[in-house]
Length: 87
Image (cartoon, rainbow, N blue to C red; front, side, top):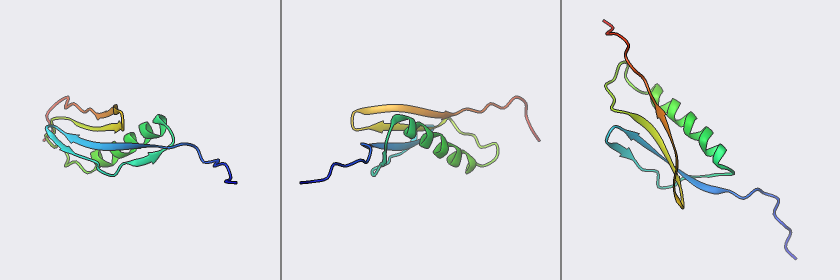
């Protein structure tokens, strides 16, 4: 008789990076236990990508778009605005 599994069920979430019109597609995805875990992963991934931006880069929008097998789940967006010109 097989033992019951006590591991929580996991879903595969795909994290795609959008920078303006450019999209980097995630073909592998991550096995995560909840949508909340996917939200946290998206926020951390977005911070990593934003950290790589050139200072004062002219970006037309930066986001991590998350989907599962059923379709889009969430979008984490990095928003910044220049308040005044900097030399």
